[in-house]
Image 1 (cartoon, rainbow, N blue to C red):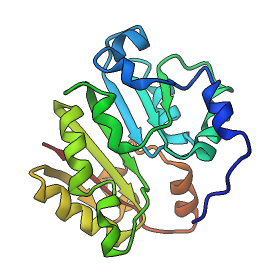
Image 2 (cartoon, rainbow, N blue to C red):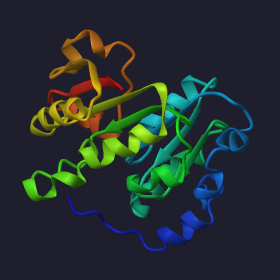
Image 3 (spheres, rainbow, N blue to C red):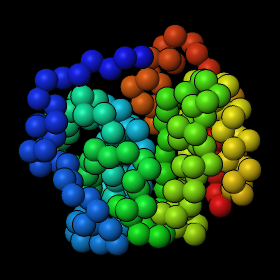
Length: 211
């Protein structure tokens, strides 16, 4: 899907009080940025932010960072953020490949990947957020007992991810090809895409993994 660019999106993000402009400088000291040493959970490719902001509101005992590389998409999340009084969430406009420059080894307790671009062509497989390239990045920043959660409506991407994640030495703890008809639906928080897909009756795939 082609993204419609919003005029002045970059300028608005650069001046937003909710976006960390030089996240590399926070590496190893995110607890100071939040003002508390609670666990840090991140969503890579957060879209318009519904999922992670709902988590932040429901779990004030945790710190959250939403990561979105597309400025026009992030801008929509910032508009929602301005309507809340959350104190445990920050946003970054960076590529997932940069995460080892932003987080110290073991600094992140949980990683969420929700409805990532499937990059369906084989020659683009390395761009998938569950490819070995990105799993190696997550391995560097995730705590020893940390976990990864992945959701998608794309069954082909899900099957690829089950194989890719396991091949990288991770343990698939649980998975389902039909989230809403499984035990994994308990406590599930929806994204914008997920709410739309659910209304259309589409099946959602979900997995959790540990190293």
